[in-house]
Length: 407
Ligand SMILES: Cc1cc2nc3c(=O)[nH]c(=O)nc-3n(C[C@H](O)[C@H](O)[C@H](O)COP(=O)(O)OP(=O)(O)OC[C@H]3O[C@@H](n4cnc5c(N)ncnc54)[C@H](O)[C@@H]3O)c2cc1C
Image (cartoon, rainbow, N blue to C red; front, side, top):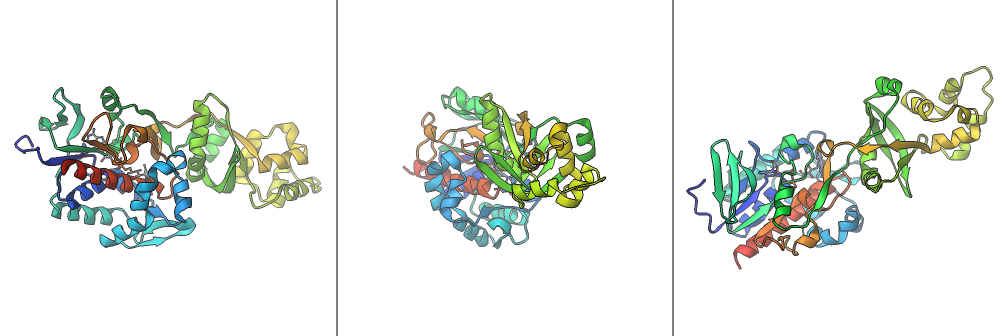
């Protein structure tokens, strides 16, 4: 590596979807590109994302799509207008990967997998002249402003014409992204937001009985409500708490409430298809000698985990009061104590704020250094929104770096 003349070359650090897209934009603009990654191969989290079916993007109307990025939506608007769901699907098709719109308008490759797309993409990038340097861990800058790398072969210094940082967040660190970059950027004067788990599970602290009997079981066809937010779906009861898609969807609200020192209690609707009046009426039905558990099972079809949650949370006196019990079946309070650690989260919130960059995603504090992907301070629910914004910001940063080098 040390023999290379770096003067005209651009370094992309991080070979996830954001970094690879930056490399593609740079190569398309005629730049000489080197991709560095700490891992033995690129795209490890992308491949993991493909395990349960690669949800590339989402096919809802653009304004709804944009709205999923919450407070950062307007910052991301130009990036997603330039490279949003439609462009992403066309881009995948260009790599020979056709996509389809699945249930709830999520978009997947026809074969659901990430590996064929990544393989075709890497092949194309190499053909375009992009060079890959694996097992190269970036460890910050030296006194002269050169990038420092550590590898099994030793250390190296690289001083490229521009740098794109696409280092990911801090979730699933064993796949390469560990958030180690945070103090290095902070030390160079970049005002960063703390990293926090996003799309994460929570600790609840179940009784031993519930934990041992039901850990790992899904709660299907339920709804969660929290301060005006309400959504239907499913989630999983873990040994100590809750996780899964419906919990991830409300996780930023619960996390922020806990961080602000508040009580985070969501309401679980165990029968979202049934109005409260119907539940009350069924509960009030004479049950004769039958136990309450049998009554719940026969009249309301509440058994197993759903019933266990009721026994866990509903106080005895409320069990004897059909009106109160019915209200709790429709709004069972679940108090979460803490988010699960960021290493377990699907994604990361916090990082490089848009205010610290120009419109090309170049850091104001470090001219010539661009940032992209999950290391930027935005978050979104699962559903293809994460990858889409990583691709879009990678492209923007790559184009910005190309313009910077060619200026
Ligand atoms: C289980 C799971 C399933 C998911 N499923 C989906 C899904 O279906 N749809 C969706 O939209 N999103 C999904 N995501 C999220 C998505 O995978 C991430 O948002 C996305 O991969 C982030 O891309 P990135 O390029 O910003 O970072 P990453 O993909 O994390 O890539 C960053 C790269 O930087 C490298 N790196 C980090 N630090 C250094 C360093 N110091 N030196 C050198 N290299 C370094 C890493 O090795 C890594 O290769 C899922 C995530 C998980 C955990």
